[in-house]
Length: 280
Image 1 (cartoon, rainbow, N blue to C red):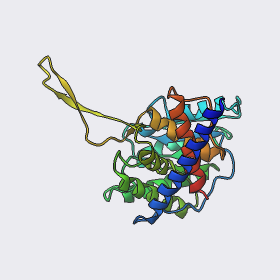
Image 2: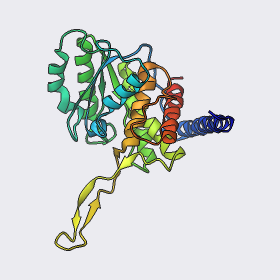
Image 3: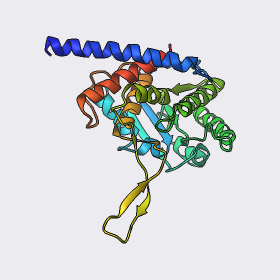
Image 4: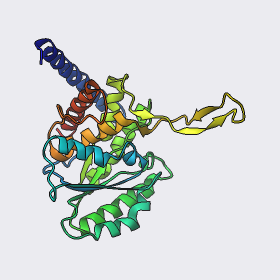
């Protein structure tokens, strides 16, 4: 590596650190303030079952991207590591409860932890949040009764809706604190990345329909809200999970999920800064 490139990367790291600290401090100053977690990661999670919806299965699945980060670090061992994904498109937590019993009935040693991810707005939607909290508590009890560790995966606000991101972060963190379980700050990382890296698009558009269908100039229309993760969004989620579940930075990992190396490096660094700061 040239001295110029080394200096550039060092300057980038300092810039990201300072900007991220400023953004997190700004989040803390907002109303409602960003709630801090009471449970911190203490041990590696090598065998995890991810339970969620399209937020988790886009872009070949967050479990596969996380697994690729582990493999690229040389830490993956057959028999020691297992990451699997159970999803339902548009699914809410309560819809997973029956299937969860079946998945938890696997032989002892199949899993160490179950990572629970809810519908995009159910933790904060006034019509859904009561059901969400009840379902999470039931799921956590199911997981704990199987002598496994329940973990909440904090989701993110829709593109450009920073207030929604803070609301979701607080909803997940407050519930995790109440249940005395770990929450992974993926939503906070999205919140920071959206503001610090406007050139990195973390979202993809969802097709709504088509206009001028019978004409030669047919055009697709798209839903107003952008919420599903792009490849960069899923990669950021995987990097935050790596940072939280293994308590180490993914910086320098050669798995980039096909992203430009500079973009991957920015997301790697940001994920560790946000995660380590969140649990500080």
